[in-house]
Image 1 (tube, one colour):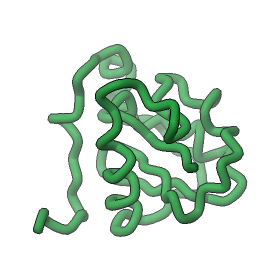
Image 2: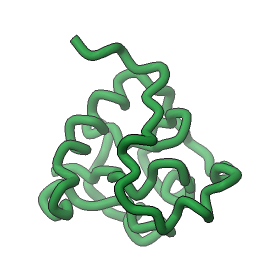
Image 3: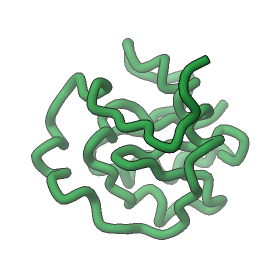
Length: 114
């Protein structure tokens, strides 16, 4: 099992989770973070740190968020790791309560779909 960053992170990119991760398994894209399932040790310390509640255990994902399992793995393979907390996106507070944000996910740097 691994932990998964879900849609709530899109356009927020708070990095409180990164600051507590003991194995540096987070990777950073333009407006989203992902967890590398190969590096995640399933400790769960990141879950309570996320101010928007975007991180779930793989087997506890909310309905409709299952696609983020593969998306985290795919993007972690191409996005650079992030090991230190940074400022959230400038308009993160405005986006924190917005639902259905997947269409706003910027996957720049990822390989185009096959």
